[in-house]
Image 1 (cartoon, rainbow, N blue to C red):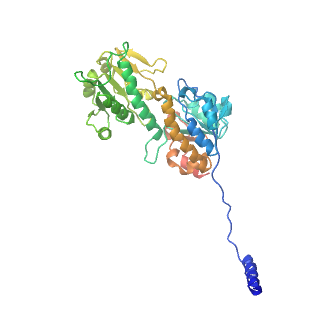
Image 2: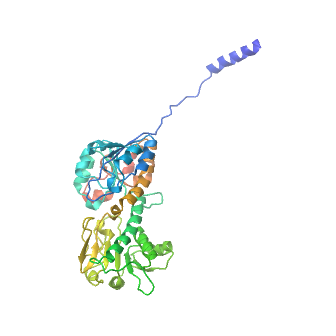
Image 3: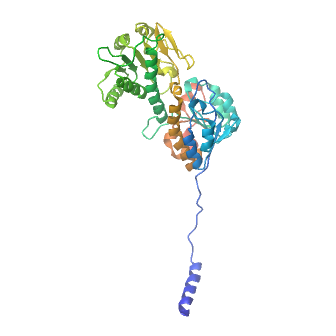
Length: 406
C-alpha cells in the first residue's frame, strides 16, 4: 500500500511539471441594454413601439426599459401596466433620451434629436419625403446610429414592419370606406357588400401589394365586386393566387381605369414606390366622372398620393369632398387602430432588442445581422444611405466599411 501511495505521489508531482494548456479568457458578449420609449409628440401618432408584455419579456432578460409617462395611453396601455411589467416610468423626455437605444414610432423632431446622448442609437420611422437636410445634420452632430424600421428587411428580402402595418392598413381602409359609403352626408347610404336582388358594391384597388391584397380579401369576404389594377403583371398573378379567387385584374391602362372608376363605389389607392414620390395615376377628369357619393381612400398620400385631387388630411378632419366624391387622405391609417398596430410593432421590436443585447450592443449586432443593417441610414452620424446622400447633398460613407473598421 505504501508503495502504491508513493507511486501516486510521484505521478502527481510529474503531472504538475507537465506543460499545461493555455487557458484563454472567455469574454461574455451579452450586454444588458437601456431602452428608452418617449411619448410621441407627432400630431395624432397614437401607437407605441412596445406593449407591456414585450417590456416584461425584456426586463425579465435583464434589460432596463424607461418609458415616459403617458406614452401608451393612446394605445390603451396605462403607466401602471408598464410599471407592473418592470419598466421605469419617468416624467421627463430628457430622462428617456439618456437611454443607449431610443425606440420611437414616428421620426424624432429637432428638439428630440438635441436631447440624445452623443453616440446613442435610434430606431424609428424615417419618412424620408418629410425630412429636411437639417434633420440629418443634427443626427450627424450627435453621432447617432439611426435605423429606419420601414427599410429593415428580413432574410427573404421583404420588409417585415412595412408588411405588418400594410396588412393592418389594407383591412382598415375597407372598414373606413364602408363607414363613409353608408354615411348620409359623405356617402350614398350604401352598405358595403352584396345581397340577393341587389347589385354588389364595386371596389377598385390600385396596387396589388400587401395593402391591396388585404383590402381585396376583406372586400371579397363582405361580398363586394373587386377589381385590382397594378403596373406589374407578376403581382397581379400573385394576388389571384393568394386570394384563391379569379378576381378582375388589369394593368394600369388609362382607358380601362376610366371605365372602372365610372361605376366604382370605393377606390383604394395603394400604389407604392421604393423611394421618392408615388406617380399620380388618377387624373382630375377621372375623378369628376365618378359616381356622386363614392369614396376614395388614398393610402399613398404619405408619398404624395396617386389621385390628382388628393390633399393631406388628418384624424381630426379626415375627409373632404371634391366633385361630390369623398376623399380620405390620412397618411398614418394604422394609427387609427393603435392597440392592434402597437402589438404588431412590438412583436417585431421585442425579439430584435433581445438579439441586440445578446450580441453585446448595437455595433456588434449590426456586424452580423445584415437584414437589420439594411435599415441603417446613419452610423455614428455618418450618412450610409445613398438615396439620402444624393437627395440632400450629404457625404456618403459605406456602412460595411465603417462596421468592419470597428
